[in-house]
Image 1 (cartoon, one colour):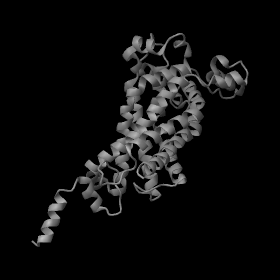
Image 2 (tube, helix red, strand yellow):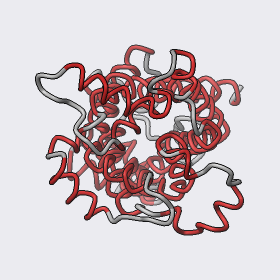
Image 3 (tube, one colour):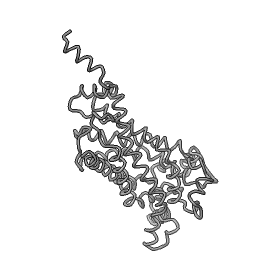
Image 4 (tube, rainbow, N blue to C red):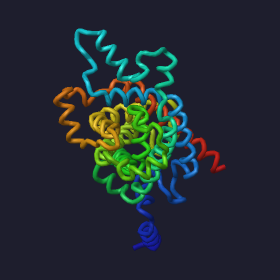
Length: 338
């Protein structure tokens, strides 16, 4: 064998998997943690960009989230065919609760319960989810990129890595469940928190705040799989490769695709999770029991209560925060690397 060929083979054998993968696909960027591989953002940029997205989302969309949670928690039929007045009365009662008979001002202010829990939860959630998924994707691409490429093909393999890393991140999100549970209670059953401090609640309830953790995992895994997988698939369709700077329009379209898929897939289990969380601390109810009652009293359609406002408004909320996160991460990465 020619000496130069021998040298090249030796050099190739010591390349990390991700570098070999890049060599097989020239022009393709791999998001990874190695310094010699293109990264989608530094750690600082990811944290800061995701936090800005969380704060922005909270300020604009918390009332919508409250409405969706209250509709999902309303355990009676909302829509009465042939009776618009009864349907309107039910919606008014479900959305505004004790403020249903009051004026516009009290009704509007009543849609901001749990803003404290919501702020902490939303910022931590977005930093963890939008900042953590690229890190895990970097790791999976570096370690398993060739395997995914061989099994699914390059484009589909990249989408599957995004989806799988997103799903794993979604499962880990269960660690934040206590904050989510308190936010939901503040939005749907504030009387359960009246006169109680945060420290007192955590000390007394303990792991009871993780009630519904299994259902949360069951909801998050496919939901996050669809969110990140749909986002990457849409970008791939628009021929936006990893490492390329997408335009605002491209990010919005990709995020919208992922959001619609994620919300639709997760909605039935989100209804179950919400109802588990809004139960009184001293009167828990299992997910199986909730499903049984739901089917008996409200019908199968109850699994999709709140889906319309979520798709119409919560969907854009996710699109908004996802787009803001990606662009601010890109912006701060450029600034920090100067």
